[in-house]
Length: 313
Image (cartoon, rainbow, N blue to C red; front, side):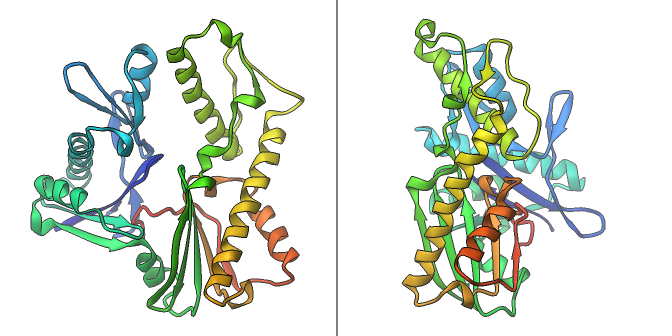
């Protein structure tokens, strides 16, 4: 049987398959004339009740502003949408493997979602669905011999700290006030006069801001729409200041988590950064400064955004 491993995130849906050499790679989704491995969690429901997913949902929302575009988890039609997501993943996996016998591994953080598992079983069949705790995945594959691993998950709607000691999870808590989405981009932009915009226009402008934020966080160049300009001399510099403050708050959360289980940074053998905020091109620099301010050094840390995408499951 061929397998696809999936993390149903609130910002992106990450899925991983194996290539011909048995190495993990991101699943590619067909999007009309192109294919992408980045599958946004955006979803839109048409008046006819059809589910529009990913890039299509974002594009559909731009041309049909009366439609509400949101992340799949926040929708009131979660069951319908989750089924459509699983069907899309299965279809793409069948195309990748050239085989219809597909199983799915669902990653979860603290609590397994029985509703999601049930929906997956209707698409993949009951015997073809497995679930795994994300902390267990990282512990098994990244540092099975380390005594203490810290996983920092910079999620869209919250920041989670997981402390894994050998086979035991010491700590797994999420702070909903430290979501990556809390970094506001609109104050950094001079848009057209918003007084002339209705609520729909402002919501679509918010989607543009979210895209700009991701580009800047990745260190990529940003071309602003013709009716917008960056405040000050540099959009990137202004965002970097906000991002640095955000990262320090997250690292303080890690410090507090360690104190809760009577540990310190000196006890940590490996740190792994995951999630949307972990894309940041300044995270290494900021983390090194933070660790130095605590008068310690770490044996190992990995700042690549490998994500809870089951790449290692």
